[in-house]
Length: 315
Image (cartoon, rainbow, N blue to C red; front, side):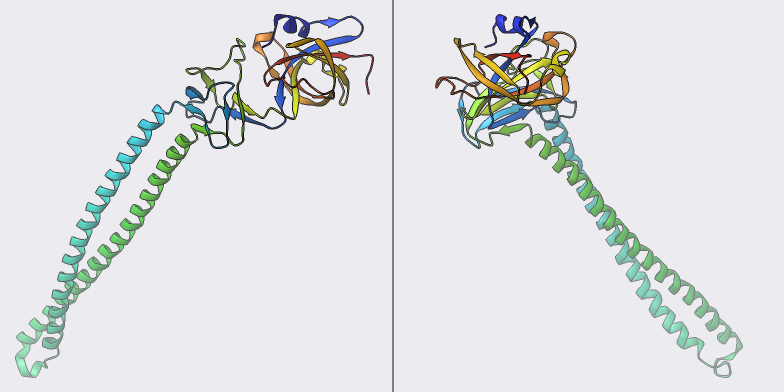
């Protein structure tokens, strides 16, 4: 737990050429749990694994409220079923039209062949009037036959296009449904390694994250850390960043062991700053510190540490 003393030191430039910053103990083997991407970019926590509990890989960690997605999924399933039912009826109607077009084609085909045979009878055998009537019947039969062919082709093309549209529509609606279901699946997060659950804190109040809180997508909700290969994650005001260097030696005091000082060194300084509203305006840069000395056996994850950086001794 961060003490008032630590926060006080974090804001002071002390004498003897030293600055003080505060941090928390974290493992180098840590899984960071972020608020997943939600449609409104602001998710509500509905369930969390207990802080400090030991979890194994595959255990439950976090569930985000997905009631809005549940309703969207339900609506999308209904849309897909309605689309399939409408498409089925449309195909049935077109097949009926196709059967009617085939019957009409077969009738006109027979009539056309009969008219051709009659039209081939010579004039001298049937007389002028009958001959002209046969020729006229042939022309009418040809028109009806061509129309029947065109109608059959048109219905066949319509069925083909309709089937393609239906297939495309089903794929599109199914993809949307799959996306919604996959997104909802991301709302439940499981551990990817063994370790202990550590809750994050609110940027504005410094209070621990808890069930019912709403957080923006991408914000840290909790961590799963192994209680070994420990390091310290600290934050320093942008004003003091130029005073630090990589591999710079520091002194460390843990809030649970204030009577003992340990040696450490800065192993990483973030290139970009972040807002820490609880500490006031300005940017704060993440500093990763390695503990050189042997740490106490009962040192726990999440404990606070006070780091003294002697500005007179830079590597």
